[in-house]
Image 1 (tube, rainbow, N blue to C red):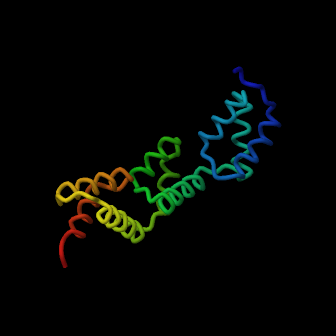
Image 2: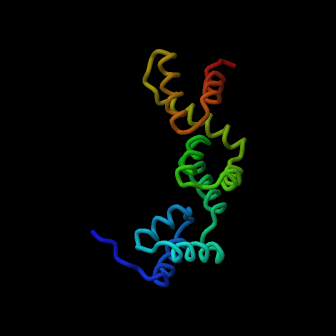
Image 3: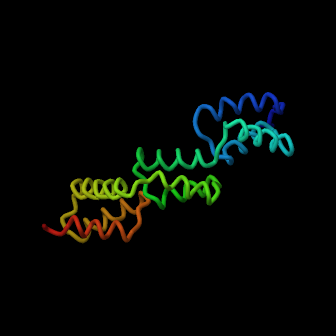
Length: 158
C-alpha cells in the first residue's frame, strides 16, 4: 500500500496528539513521520518544533520508560538498558533515566521475585530449583551476580 502524503502542518497537528498521549522517543516520532511520508527538512523542522515546544524530550522519555518498566513490569537494569538502546536514546538520557531506580527498592524487588519463584517452583532438587529461579530472574534483566548472591542469601538458614 503506498504511503499517503501528509502536509507538514497536518503531520505536526497529528504529532501533537501522538506525543501528548504518552512520552515518545525520538525514534518513534521519526518513524511516525516517515509513515506519514514526511521527509528531509520538513521532518527535521517538525522534530525541532516538537522539542522546542516541550512535546518531545528524550530525558523525560527515558525517565518514564525506566520508571514504568521497573515499577510496573519489575524489569532489571539490563533489560531496561537494552530497551532504551533499541529506542536509540542518548547515553546522557539513559544515565538520567536510570536514576529513577532506587537501590533499596531494586534489592527489595529482586528478593520478592526470587522468593515468589522459589515458592512456585515444583522442582524437588535444590540445584534444579535454584537454576530455574535464577534463569527466570536473570531473564527479567537482573544482574546474574546479584541474583546468585540473593539466591544464596535466601537459601541459607538463619
